[in-house]
Amino acid sequence: MKKSALHITVVLLLILNFVVTSNVLANPIDIEKLNNYDFDVSDDSTLSTTSAPFSILTFAIYLVFFVIIAALAYLTTRWIGKHQNKIRLKSKYMEVVDSLYLSGDNALHIVKSPEGFLLVGTGKDGVALLGKLGDEEAELIEQAEENPIEENFPAQLNNYLGKIKWFTEHNKSGGSK
Image (cartoon, rainbow, N blue to C red; front, top):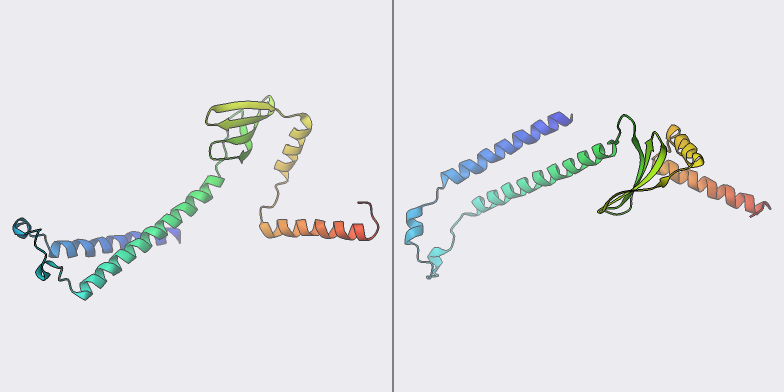
């Protein structure tokens, strides 16, 4: 399906290119008139005398090109976004387990290495080892990796609302706060 949309887009671009090229070649620029033109005189004969259908056709062609370019930019952005999430930095002995981007240049990374889990900070100045995570944190990270959290927003919202309902019901029935 995606390949056919790409093929259709390429064919449309080729057809539009042919139409625009044939229009330009049908009305070549006359250099002789340009050399003899007096740019200081402004009379009604120097105004452009293009017909309305020609202007509408030009506008329609520009509009179609704009829509095609906007659609291609949208599709490219979505494609990059989908594939960027799947990229996991991994080597034979090390793996980036999790990353937290704090700003454009600064990020925190949890790296699994032969020494254990390391907390690494990256920024415009370089990479810095912030510390080694303890055994308890390592166990929690390994458990989280085995049981991935659902990334579905409605499921997360229902889970959160369920906890709030349980908490309010528990407090109403005389439980400790």
